[in-house]
Image (cartoon, rainbow, N blue to C red):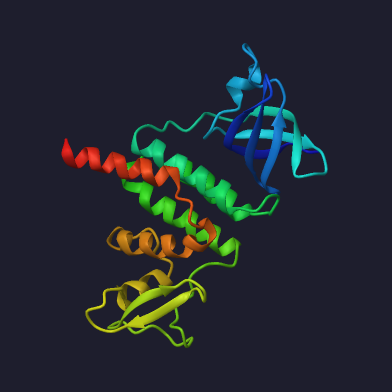
Length: 234
């Protein structure tokens, strides 16, 4: 097998010296594999197999659980700390929870790599995460459709709530909240990284991801909430 570009999404101990790893790969999507001996003290692979670090890997096996064969570093680990590190944790948790195993998602891989480059910069984090989320939703045919529940164009002066079952927007009466149609029409043009639309974009992608994530909360979101609370009270 030709070495495959990859990133480590998650790792957990397996038996005495091995680990089960979740990898995001360029052509095969999310791959689960046993990394033998990677937990052994002094193992070279242990230092290579780190989150946010570009890798080249090969594996073998026909079932859902592969066996990792080749593991090589292909560059420097993204330098993430504080909120940037939590955002990286969120990106990894999202990939692990939402992507089916061995579902090819080349565009998602590319945007994941771009997201890691953006996360060290506070000004770029929100936009990069929204772009990654919408690319993931598009790859799963779950992206929002910027029409109303009758497939009519959105009205700039109407407010809407997201209709998760139909991936569109439902008009609501004045005073019932919702998102203004003008902002949604800007998002429909692809302005997911526009600073003035950050709150709206986050609300839309979170609403669209909710059916895929189910009721179990993301641990990364809870950690981000705690960090925000500490900042408010400090």
